[in-house]
Image 1 (tube, helix red, strand yellow):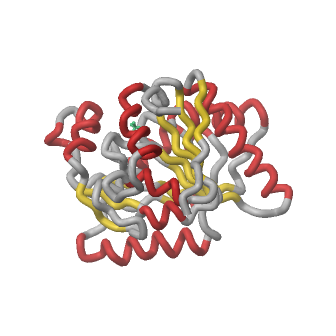
Image 2: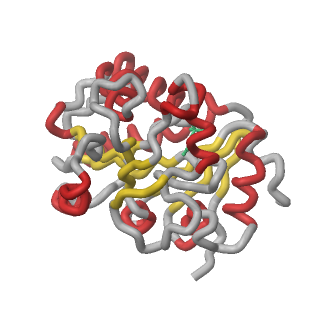
Image 3: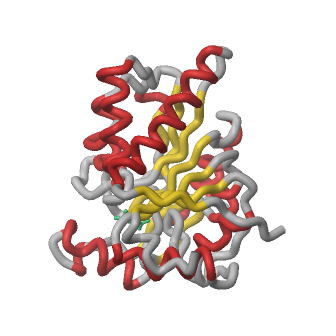
Length: 253
Ligand code: PGA
């Protein structure tokens, strides 16, 4: 099936994030009314920060509660303790969890310090935890300049599950400034696979700025290929690309 993937272009990432946060908020509130929890798949990086700021605002000013929300993050660097400032555990607490009423027991990220022999079991346990939470209702994604979603670098198959991966040199280069040098950036990570991500019932891929324009075009208008894992989203029945004008600037329509 190759359906046309919806693309919504906003004049700013702030407007885009208001739109996405409103959809998430409505989902959480509707499910709460039915007595159901909401399972969110969350992303790190610069892209979702304005979304998390808007969710925090909705919590503080409009009574949005996260008590019935369970979260699963896409990935974590291998070799980083939770307390490392660049761990995604730290990122998520700094940018979202410390500012809302989510229960700590409902927060899930892969571990960055699992020993090599325990990695397969750890990845399987992550898959099992997502399944026993009922699957992901709403998955947030960014896109790397390699086309990765999560850390599914070029070459990762569409049906991959949570696993250890080697980070692409471009991904490590993009992370170098926040780590204070390329040599400090981990070389491996644990990531949900493309198959794990594509199991989510609703997916929003966010991209801002002209640095993302060419990879957004490749994902939406190039071949569906494991060279650009975001292109797999075109096979998902309920995925939307949410872009600002710069990220959309290379698209032909
Ligand atoms: P960014 O990263 O949000 O920092 O641009 C996106 C990604 O690598 O998925």
